[in-house]
Image (cartoon, rainbow, N blue to C red; front, side):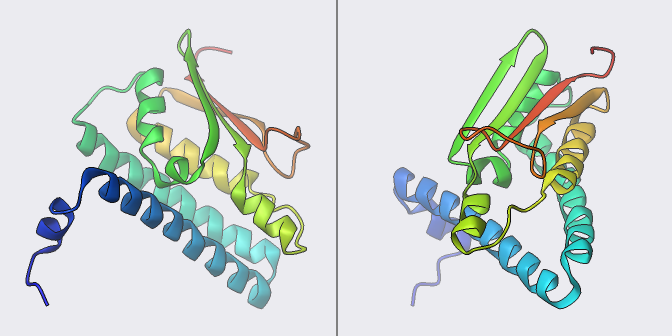
Length: 177
């Protein structure tokens, strides 16, 4: 068995393998989240599971923002910078089918095909009403980077959504409508 440090082990990987491993680990984080949610839901009910999930994701949003802020080495985050930082989150990396737009001081993050929701449906479960969980996460994330950025939910379950769009989030300065 090699006595390489974790850093040395990861450094020895070819770049593509390292990227693949990063995406596997991002997906694994969401697998654990989903399994944990299902277990809490089964034991305590959906309402309690959502309450716990909201707390966890709101806290995670702030933690992730602080870590990404350090990673990017920036201290000022305009809307475009918040959108760039959001792309480095585990949540964004887990969303293979997404659309991100930045235009005129406003950013939009849209999940086109949500694996979490599609997995629930395939398993015979209802859509997960993830709006309060995701909104808390994204608000905490944006606020940590720039308290003047407002996050507006345009659509997210339990809201009705189009076939090709599960949720849509708008990021903009608080003084803009």
